[in-house]
View 1 (cartoon, rainbow, N blue to C red):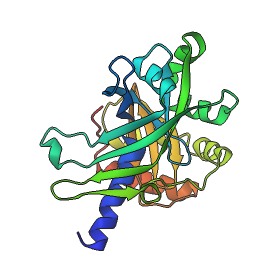
View 2 (cartoon, one colour):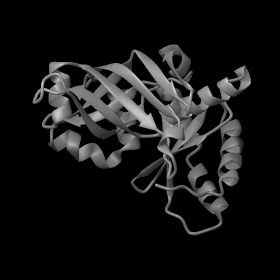
View 3 (cartoon, rainbow, N blue to C red):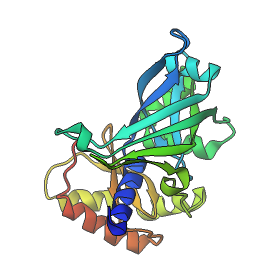
Length: 238
């Protein structure tokens, strides 16, 4: 793979990591010692690129993580074709419980998954953070390798307050994008923003609109988002 092609594929992998929003987590089974236990979970990233997950204390994977925080998280591109030709990422990681005093991380989660708030407030779900150790990148046939986490984790230069300010300044953008689609569509809502993309909610679905970043001004983000949205025809599969 030529250096330019490699850079493009790694950027695609970073966007996949940031915008898949659902993954398979593998934990060490308590019920069957020595065997892995895999579950499908929703996730979003914190501003350092590390996954956040809201987990029930009753779930088997949570019990497993409490006994042994070592785990793995795997994501793959959505496809209706040959899954072995899709881009896939797997990372061994360590799970940690997020302190309830970390309001910024909790607020971030509920921006992405507002319907989960009753689970946290009434059903004893708790927020966890995964700290990746490194990544196994698979870009298709004969394109697999281990990568250091510094190759794929991307820290946003925006602090929490800076992201909130940008979200406020771009509050009208989802309506503009809906109008650009030129068809009846469910309303869009901004869940998150960073210099390389916008995370949009549409009903219960989350979508990432990848942008040619880094972009940090309201106007540059607005122009790039409108161009990216028009290029894809304003259509997304949930």
